[in-house]
Image (cartoon, rainbow, N blue to C red; front, top):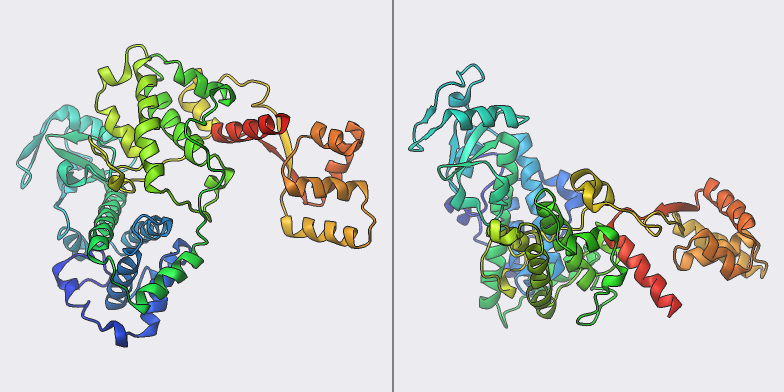
Length: 465
């Protein structure tokens, strides 16, 4: 059986497509390996020829194996995960499902979950050796927005999903079609990750011009940046934390524990400790975590999260010990009880939730102070702003509006800070900002994330010092 598109790059039949000579390889495949590392190009590769797809993918993975912890590895794997989801949404069929089953067992149960089936009876699921109790049938039909059509064994997928958020009955996860696409794509990503890391030890000291070319070009294409604003050990400044984080650190009640600890503190403390920069929100940027950095997550950040959980009422991890796995999953270590540095990258390292999300999901944490509401002004069109300022500087005639623009090109500021630095009246500055805003050169910015709060307050504190 041959499918039109490749959905399992690790199937036995794909191995027959990978017999190539690196010294005589078609350069179009090399270019394809490089281009496919960027998620922006995914639309071009949904219908990619199967042989070209397989060869270019493994060329990319083998090239990345030379530096398995580099940020471009995670960026390329994320791009492939998203490509698979898009490919499945366009080309899913019985043949494609059979191909997916060569990677993990997948059970089609839609016919047994029909809308007209009485909710008063349990459902016998042939081939799975289980019976779905009527109460679970009722929940699955009423809790999901889409129809449950598939099931998978939880032990096949626990490393790529938060099992505590899934509906599991008798060892099976029950999934809608779109949930299956998402889960399966993550399983393939994990297999690719394992392939890269397993190959890296065997490729030590082994190099080839093709691998070097792909590796260097991918790095340039993804515009990979190294970590910025490095903080020294123990450099977290709790006095600069936003109110929501301070409340979460102090311990919260049972209704807020999960969001406060698992979602807010886990992400905030890790990014504030290692990458206190607004560039983490820029999808064009990626960052390198060294082995030392990853060890800091394990030795410093995780214990602080555990302590905050223990201060909850009742103690969070004592009542829900499995949530410790969830913490590690959100930090990027996958679902493991004993994480090591080598486990980093098995799951996504989650960014802190936005202020809006916190207010929606854990309103007791949201107690804004004056700094939360502070508005700053910043440049929104840097190229045009620099052109205006450079022309004025060349004429040695910088008007007040251009002075404001030059100041904001360095960093964002409040209206009052601009007035103080330039020695202008606040009302005059407000008028100048309004004019620059109408010309779409600058715009007002408010704090939209607890990490942004911390970064701005940290910068303000440094300037005062």
